[in-house]
Amino acid sequence: MQTKLLINGQLVNGDGPIQAVFNPALGRVLVEINEASEAQIDAAVRAADHAFQSWSQTTPKERSLLLLKLADIIETHGEELAKLESDNCGKPYSAALNDEIPAIADVFRFFAGASRCMSGALGGEYLPGHTSMIRRDPVGVIASIAPWNYPLMMVAWKIAPALAA
Image (cartoon, rainbow, N blue to C red; front, side, top):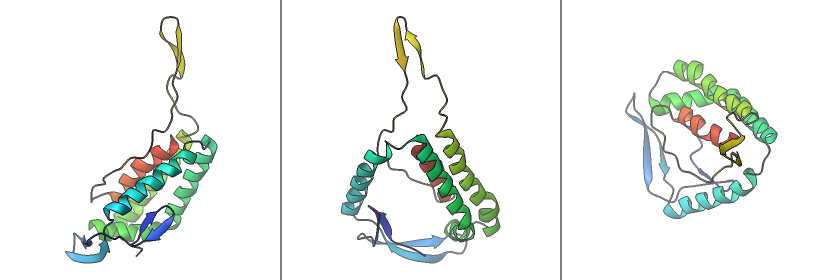
């Protein structure tokens, strides 16, 4: 199991305190990992902010193709991801494999399509005598906390729309 942090494209060990990760169904430690230090969190945010500059300029086509590729990778590694999700959350493997993994891949496919056809009124006279236009521009780096019971699905629900916009 990979336990390193991904910061600025590099896998690094956490410099923070050791955190035990338990299988809640069995009460056993799955792995002990080092948390990120405050400096590593700052470095990750800086790297994400830097990446935002180029990502925010990608075309809907590029975003769509990358989201579709990610969905394919999720399906290719479905058994491995389902095992991790099952152990991490204490849920049945079959539920993770047959219910969650396909739904997670589908979230990325849905937003791959949505990235090409953002809906809503894009122009009009919202004030008399003035033509207004709505632009959907990414706003920047965010942090997200995922609950323990559906971490992969929560990641999909947060990341896919953010990457599509």
